[in-house]
Length: 125
Image (spheres, rainbow, N blue to C red):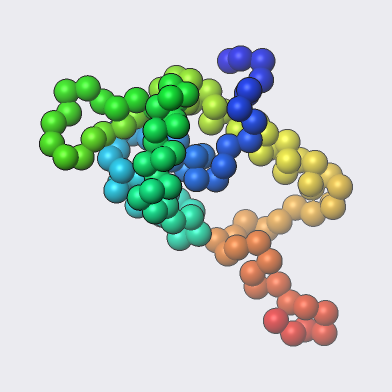
């Protein structure tokens, strides 16, 4: 793995697109996987998705699969794309470690969004 990720932090959309492409997938499938993994929080529109796919191909983080015919082009993550995901995971782990160290908080595992279900002072939701 390279010494550092020269591109900086990944956007959430790019991170989910890359995760979606660990298995070959077409554009609509990427949109579905992203929405599913983010529990509906991240929804990619076609313009956002195809702009990101072009950028990721330029960076050599994904590639279209050769020999695919038909209207739906399949894409797959490359080794360079996997390295970008690994660096992002390290960056996110560092953020969590530092945040927990400073706040002293370790959040309970939940499917809810941050802050959901917490009560305000006085017992009000």
